[in-house]
Length: 500
Image (cartoon, rainbow, N blue to C red; front, side, top):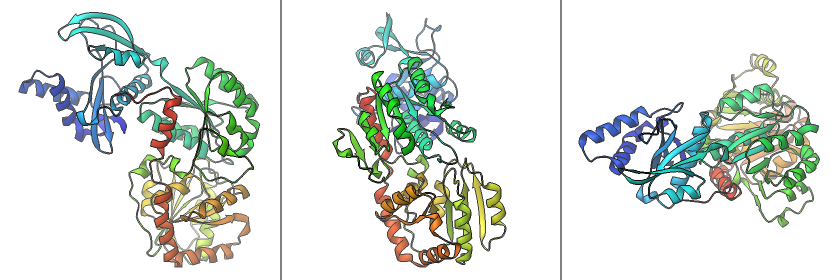
């Protein structure tokens, strides 16, 4: 279940208006018309008044609004949570609670520090959820309690991760996807803490993530994070770091624990996982000699992979025909310029279809790749700053990756992939992943000459049975429900129940 602005789902506006009128209207045709007109006025996402709708897929389950005012005589206070409604068949599933959390997040994003409401029968429910009574009075609805919620009390997740051309963008992309998953469910808002290049920061903000807290010097990471924790309400500290930084982060994790903050580590197969309250390792990893099975809250497997939401809306299909379109996406940084290596090998292999080539936000080889494309014997289409690869992946017949997050996204669509790793570690992990059947690992890129790489690619282009087997396997490994599973694991750490 997700909560979203009704303006993004206008086909449900009449349904929402009928719910509101049937619950609180005066029973007249004129009253129903007024209810529909007011809902139309709230079809917006940038200012109060506005309306949210809860959706299970495209099925509407409930609604909530922010009004400028919802009680005569109290016009000096704004905004007000109002018109909370859940369909009878969806009650008892936490829909109302999640709508409330989502609308509070919206209010905070719009710059408000406090939200108000009037309550009659449900005041105990709101009090248990953190609302505070500030007055009571008699109204036409009966005894009414005016309540307020301090938005500074909303859970916040501080997420420690870095991104640059050498490291790639995977860690911060995971942060961005977790932010979307948490906010859409009204659970919390995420704040990234780390070293992020300017181009990557712009990409994150364009995607709706809050401005990150910058770390300029790794030696000061602990101080920056702990200072942020001291000045912002926080329920959870999350970390997603590469092996080298994980090994140096033990003092940081110890200080966070001493300060009383709960921790969740993503893709941490090392001994540092012992400091975490929750460990979620969604990606394949090699064995570093640490017995993770002893951890009381360890969850591993691609079923926890956070898929780009656009991929969840794109259906999988089986690829077994001729390869007419290839997708080359070698990660956000691609320091060794694997993109050009694959492009050259395709040319030597005699490929004559179309190549959709994606240049990542931190990739420094754009000019070189563009120049190379001019000399090739097949059509090359260059792409940069794409909000999502879902459309390109959906239409492609074969993909090339360097084991970034896109590799697993391709699997979700049934898109077979060839993995060419940029370092020995990723080559080892690629072998582990490929053994599950949805991709072919070619190992470390320096093993190959243009000719030998072209020969290997040619064999895959000619083997429809192999590509079909990989295509069928992919969606079984990555089913698109990872966000639901991860949020369900995080919910107790955030101090949230399932509510009404």
